[in-house]
Image 1 (cartoon, helix red, strand yellow):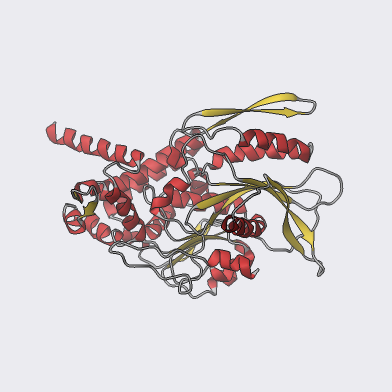
Image 2: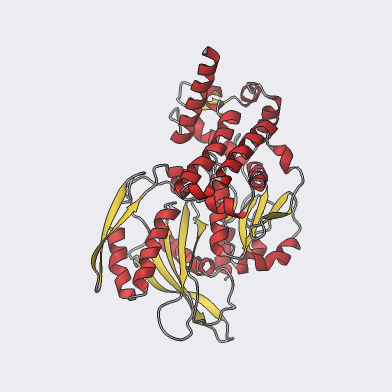
Length: 465
């Protein structure tokens, strides 16, 4: 367990703007899965690479004291000829996976019925790259009482909808035989990951059914392929979503509580996606294993999901500037108190109107439409507040740029917008976004740039008309 704990405690020394280094791991022990703005590509990979790195089955095995411990009982593929460093990293990864597949501890008992559930988790490597675990927990076919098991696909690709469909196919084959899963996953591994909006077709043979053609289509908007905003709208009111967004933008501590693992992972991924084109750059654990609860509540920012049965343990933790959200009841249990004052009131009201409109029409929109409509409201907020950033990067002869922060803030006409932006520019997520922008004149986030251009053209048209 000590080695697993070290796996989660590792953090990167990474320089902020101006070259100042962040605290090393010893001073900052629990900044576990965390990412950087420059790592967005680790979740939005280009077409043509492998769909996944591993498929593992995690089963519960009885220990000497009568409890159950999750263990990997199947792994595909088995990787060989790894270098020493690669092998050590793989061992740490494979040790960690079972904890996240059964984060709810070891108090299990065999059952005859179990509703399968889908959830995901995120792990961060030593180099800062992220791996996502897509999980389907189900009850194997058979008679009598049985223990659930988890099929977990480990991938560097962030595309929840696509992998949910893959897990549907895995579950269907599991009810027939484990032997039927291997050729399907082998066919998937040999297929190239499709470009946004494109489809890949997998041929798969099922006994007594023949050959099936399975079509896997990637969403057109790549920045929305690992999110379902509908889940967030179903659990929380638009007003509360804005309070959570405001806290996340200022990089405060956020704890989400729910009974179901699927609700936790979906809602936390959705909140993180609201920050686009910026990336949450601190501890990010959609589902915290029970054995790691004490490593989470640290003095640095974090966004984590914890099962509701640990509520008292969470509330007993001393935390400043923390927002604790009850997803079961759709309410905030603990807040700083200034959440309504963080965002500019005019823009806040516009987003609230937009969310209320989408919420009222939730039944007539597809999940993809909801994703687009909700995302546009929050992207528009960033367009209005910081969309002029590129005009304030001074380019040198060497090809690198320098961001003119003072001029950037001064250029904002609205006093309330300027007050917000002066706080936002001090966040890690903004600094890392600007660092990326200073490296190249080619914009990193095409969708965001397109929305900036559209807004500027609309302003010009209004002035001219």
